[in-house]
Length: 386
Image (tube, rainbow, N blue to C red; front, side, top):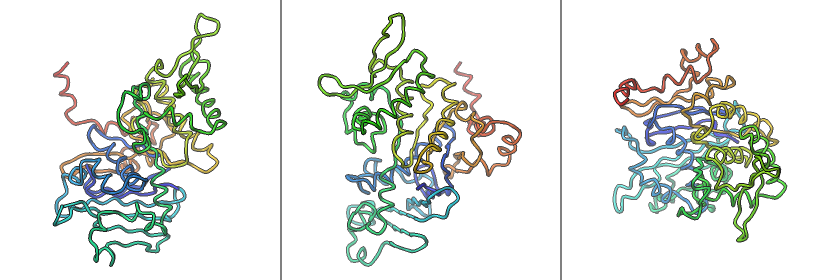
């Protein structure tokens, strides 16, 4: 399944957004335009749905409802996230989920459910507030999405959200996980603290097959690398180990704490592309990578998507990179352009901007055609600081 459409109202940067998503979607825009916040709307649904999560904890981790409400919110202050879920691109939505949030008017002023709606193939399965909510208003401090005794009829939605995978791997955290506090279970461990443990706990034949594919890619990106494997130290801690060729006949063994940042990020990216069937959210995957490698990432994503036995996996990528967007296979329909103004950030598909479509038709890459729209108007004034 995939998210075929998302509606945001008063969510962080976005006063209102209604966009269609494809199997592969690239989100571009200026700094502070809301690329991370767009991805976070889906992570928020994941946090609400997952075990140990829930509405109150998800909002608290983001600073409360006031911190996620758009500053441009005026006459309609409720925060709304709505998604449509389909079996594939171009297919009708089989599930629709809408969640509206507001502040409790009296008492402790807790964030509460303004409305929660679920439709399955057009049939209404949930429409809150219901009679039970009216009798006990405290029920509105929780969604039905997070309650196993209440989401039975639409549990596939909860399981779908819970399966989202977000990656923004930080090499220093992967190298020295014990030196960073907090739980490695934080929303799927996006920064890599438990990444090595996750690899070691993967079924042996699956683990070896994935590492073999990653090794093949790394040999191209890192010519000195001859092999990659997982191992354990004497205390049972998991590690990655690579052999690099040099003047010694047997080469040199290195563990992940000696790998370059780009090598670690590429390993994490490739593993995440190979792992799981759920929606994959990638935050600036180009960081620390060579420009030549970055330009190949969209093609790698596409091939891995097409090789999957269970059908295409949806990938949503935020990026600034002209190299990543230089791939001629990226079409305007796959790129969302974020443009901030005084009324909140606007989102539009590049396919809706005729000037971008015309430039792509004339042979430009989507990066050449669309990235100039993300450049701040006064960027030339930065030359004063040279």
